[in-house]
Image (cartoon, rainbow, N blue to C red; front, side):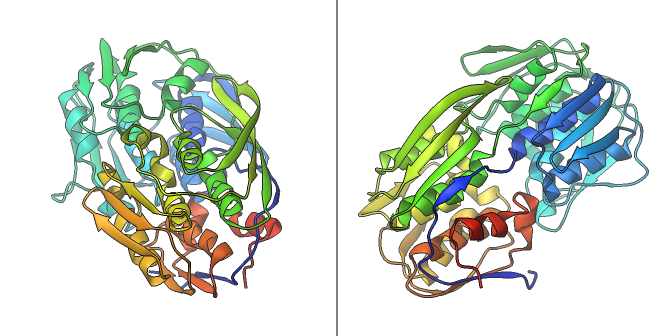
Length: 433
């Protein structure tokens, strides 16, 4: 644990106008496919967070030239699907599970060896979920005995397309296999138990790579080329969610969120909050390329507890830390089941959030695959993020309705996804000391 912290005074507000930073998931994918494309691509709205910069750095170390045109605009000179070069050393992906898992699929198709690693947190995260299907495709990939990074990838005798059914909905695993499929003989198909985020499929089409989708199956044929293009990345709904919940739970607050992505495979947080009674008005719907975008107008709302529908879990998997804060402010009890995936994030988000909620005076209990949270009143106190950026920002949001100051320990990881969180939160009315 580091010694960074947030110290927040109680009873702030969350009101005003917000243009959220670029979507992290889409930023990763835009850099990856632009690097593999033929020609030069420009990416507007790129998120310069530690996670996305780790992806950028990995491709630079493999011979891709990138030029900054503005703080959130980059030009990527693609080297083509077969143009990557061997990196000089280990590819360090920092804290980014998205980068490591998806990049592994790309690297299994290369003619050079590579090693993928990360920080202490990332190197504890499970990777058999990608290694097993990649090995079934013929990849030469090995993990540590614990099933975790570092990953060692060596050239294979050739990848073969497979049909794979995901045991658990995971956009990272799906994306890993589809991008490995770019280098495979024949057809690669991935089937999902429930719908999960589809940014990779949309991004492939944006780069003119044919993708077939039917029901919950995605297929592509290997060996084709990607064509450079211009990308406009929408605002990140996962980042906006802290301020959306902050507005709903704080009195006399109203927030307009502009240019935010509302991809239906990501907008579960909006649907869950609306089930709880949230007043969220979706306006000015439009598209940035293949991605749907809108403006949201959010107003303070009396929330009530709900049983969170299982079919919305995958569509809101990253937003549960702040949804737990909303549940703690709701009248009645909120139940979540079927979300064991939360235990395999940057922290065990079930355990970390329940411990913090209890410290702050909320009745919350762990379940193996979820939580039970009874709405109440937040007190003050000191909570620990577990080195998890979303947990840290969720507890910062709780300060808006706390009776006393809240200190959140170990907040340096916030820079992995939202480097300007404190600045934007302060503008909107959070009271950082």
